[in-house]
Length: 109
Image (cartoon, rainbow, N blue to C red; front, side, top):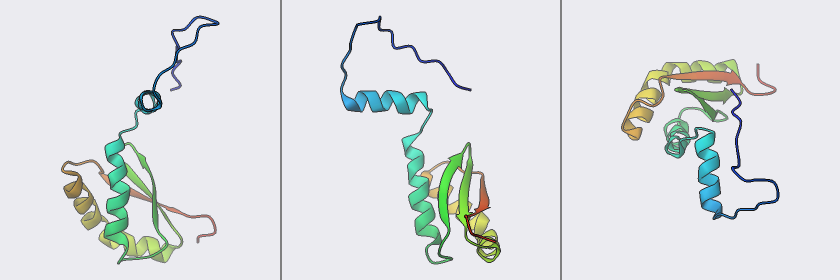
């Protein structure tokens, strides 16, 4: 899965570019979609009244990964999973997240 990056520069040559252009190139190479960052904000908004201590930590493909401190927290979120998925996708304006994966945080049950 690792791709080889070529700098297109010969030994001894240098090239300067604006920092934003360099960052955009790196994010593009990592296939990072900055619009997906909003999913984390939506998660926080939708779940802050449900349970505390749960955190969306990653997006793997179309799956949102959430850490939970205990089985009780996981169970509580399982009841609201479909509603949360619906609200996240509605706020994004398209079906971005198809599943939520719950993982226990370190020290969890």
